[in-house]
Image (cartoon, rainbow, N blue to C red; front, side, top):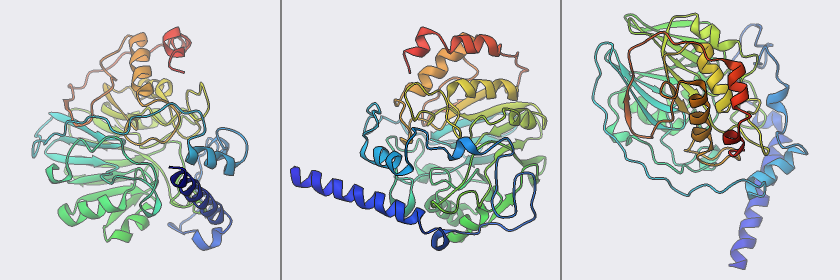
Length: 387
């Protein structure tokens, strides 16, 4: 056992050394994914968040970047334990869902199947066991809620940005070879997707693409960053998406995001009423008591996003599949449930179950959530118990 521990420590040291070597050799591992004119979020070389970048660059736990990665890799950061595996009942969706009826199935993390108007839409598809370069990185604790073989034919794929837990080349290759779906992504990520032989259409924020009669995809602003290596940071854009549907209300997919200036949800809502919103709630804690990080919203900000979108119904995503931060496995859904109970809307934005298809209710105009009351709720003993 001692020899195994020593070998493990040596391996971790080599991984950290490799990470540092990569960071010190940017010109060899940098990639140019996009070339185009400068804009209010592109300086001619790299993209940026108009509302500020500092918090997405800062090492969240303080100290040196090398120290942060060492604590993360060795698990010596005081994180609560996660289960090695969680039980999942996999489902087999219907081939198609017609008309205004809408069925949503959370596959895991940010991967969601949405079926409506005869279309099968898939967000940030990841069926791989691990998310990271060269087949390493965080391992899933929950198998996909749908076996890949049981997926219906996919018509449209949305890829929000190029992080490994959102852009999985192995899965995109399988989807392309099987279904030839329409793949829509943000500027520059089409270059990464093209490496597996798949074709993707890349949009800038505000650009719109018609994908079927009465159905269009618009890339909308959120607050994040992009990278496949240490040195290609922000060479490709990140985004959320609005899928405009011919009737019944729109679909909003937040991708991966922090709160930023908090104005971007209203920009998506301006495109029409949102029937279903897919909003992340996990990977938000890197120090004790943290409720959000610069590039990831937690449940509190997720409720604010839900309210500012004016969404009729929402599904929380980006939790419980891959361990990316320090909160407990079930902290995000517990916190969300308590906050929504406090807001008086416990059913419209409730934790889902991987693999369980949900009939999305018809659109109905929601009331507004009192954000001051929500902030007071965040100070309650029930929430503090989850910190």
